[in-house]
Image (cartoon, rainbow, N blue to C red; front, side):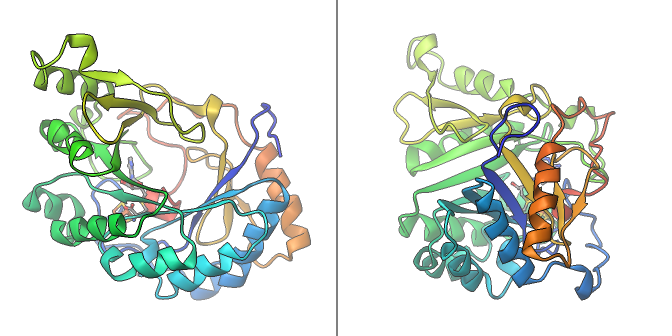
Length: 329
Ligand code: SAM
Ligand code: SF4
């Protein structure tokens, strides 16, 4: 179905839970979240009904996210049930990777197509600092386990944080030489209450190109170090490849250069709210509704998609009245 600005909506990101085994500083408060009542959260049946309704309206790509989707003990079962729904072309997962070595094989068998794994640093101490809890080795083992399973695609997502990992851009980007994983650098977004980052933390995606050109200077002609490539039409990332690399570098710029004109997605939160736009406060509840009632709410959500979100900056926070773990990033 098309929204009011002629964008064909094909993609839904579903948050399976607000809970997480990490506490990333840009995403969640240290004390975790105030756990909502079980009866206020979407049931598995409601979530599966929502997927059926979404496919009826032309949505064919599903991403499972959270919180951390792999803290759901029945995650493999959820993926196989979604796989059985007519009209679902692709099932994708976004995860911090820490439980992937346990689940990668079963997720592949259940029908998962693609995995994005978050990795903001290659340094153990910095990883622990940013996640407040996590172990780098668990996530690296998770990436390895995913790569063994022959998914359509495994991607690494790195949030660019000035003063934290801008000195590691070249090292993280060089993973594209070692393994077949695209590495996508995503600008830090100033969410509702997501950490106390100063101006210097909000660096534009263009520094990735600058750092790579500087690091490889003299090895190739300047214009041959990193080149733009065309790629996945469904992706909002601008794709580049470093000379000789196996995989691509993706640059995602929600802050410095928003990609609203190409946005083809809506979101469903773990408490059953449709969100037409990540950065708007508009929420439409489908909790407790029948499939027939949900269809109307889905139409309303798609037609409520704003043309674009307000400008974001370290001073001008997202209008979504939620942190990222409560939305589903
Ligand atoms: N727990 C999973 C994970 O970390 O991949 C899935 C949920 S997490 C909310 C999804 C993505 O949102 C992650 O790649 C995370 O880095 C990103 N994210 C969270 N808060 C963010 C922020 N303030 N700015 C940019 N990206 C953010
Ligand atoms: Fe958890 Fe992912 Fe948020 Fe980190 S970014 S706290 S891993 S939901």
